[in-house]
Length: 103
Ligand code: SF4
Ligand code: SF4
Image (cartoon, rainbow, N blue to C red; front, side, top):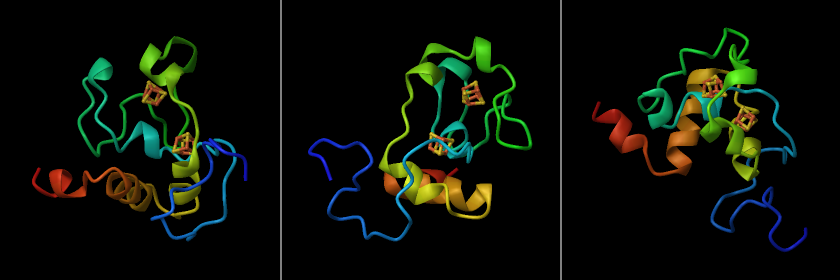
């Protein structure tokens, strides 16, 4: 693995998943984080995300979405079979699951 490889999980993350090296349109990053530019709350799928986890406004999506790059988190979340499960794992990785549980 190369130094600085964004797909290399940190040492404290067990290698639970097959290492994903690209976006598989799992929808987690469009659902788990809060996105101020879209007034999207934590843990709620973006209103522009369709049922197949594709962006309905892809060509007009805001800059924050354009800046997002796949990394090792994709390998952790994308193999989880449900969007709900992917959201929770994403929140867990970023330490946001307790904030979500308080909502
Ligand atoms: S979490 Fe990763 S694999 Fe899933 S939609 Fe976002 S960039 Fe793509
Ligand atoms: S605007 Fe599109 S890319 Fe951005 S969070 Fe919503 S569905 Fe995802």
